[in-house]
Length: 479
Image (tube, rainbow, N blue to C red; front, side):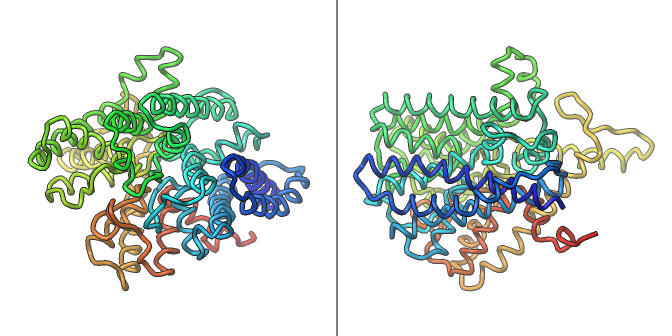
């Protein structure tokens, strides 16, 4: 373990968070609020980060283990310090609650312990949603984009942080890849902000809502979420952009360089569109009797399917009152999620495709033991390691859900609420069903349950392995 390089990278992460906190500090000053909660947090971050950054090690090489540890530990520290402004401002007095809210922000989950957000300071609400935008693409990706990278070893950092079964470079240099990803991210965020302003939202609301959409997070400025604006045009804009942010960002890069054939041959993209379209149609037909017009029905079905499949978590209705069939569809979308390489959570469409093809390959092998069956994705053969990794991830995913559900069920809200709370956290969605539905929150859980669900969110956002490696005794054992 290269401890000096690990400390240096953690110093970069904490100093980056200190710099990012200048944005809510400026917001607080603009709205004549006290900037002290942010300034104190910045001072605490720099007091730890500066000594670490100044001692740049001679050996800057890191391997997969250090990459996973750095990402996992970095996200925990980001959340631990990011919670301080909530406590210092009095917006969330208890640190455990503030930690839950901050983890939910950085992991783009959107689960909240707050029963009311209207009336909270502008700076605090800005920081709350800004954590979505930071965590959506990944803070390590941001560090690689704007600060000196770890050289050839930076691929290990991106592999540990970017969600999905496969990761690769768009261009030969990893720093260029990170810059391209963030360039696309910023551009889409800016376009959505402008569109929402044209639709009638104030600039502050449009920007902060775009943070939540881009990061597929779901923290809203209204107690009734997006329904609080009563603006059908804004609902369509947000719904479309939630869907767009659930697409693999590689597809946007291919469109920019006119590699249209690569976009069209993407099995994951075709499956994403097909699954979404079927879900919207099924929900619209099943809930038609709840709406006065077909337009309202289609818009609401489109919005909620987009919100849940992209794992954003915004809402325009309380879907707890929907028929069981529609709620079952939402739970299915909750588990599948969106595309690999997007800002969304869930199992990922590509991983589901690979697992499905693995099952078919095993079935064919049983029927024809001597045949040679190769699993392909987008026409290209997948390695056995990739196929095995997808199956192993599913097994770990199910085990983690089971363990978290059993632990949360002690003193919880009941089967439906507790199970969907765990699913909402591990898939980084936010609202579940029952007591933790769009009209409820997670504030009623015990402190231990909130801490457990906080780490469940981290396990889900980092796709389990980085967190497992961090807490594995063998990781820290000297060889």
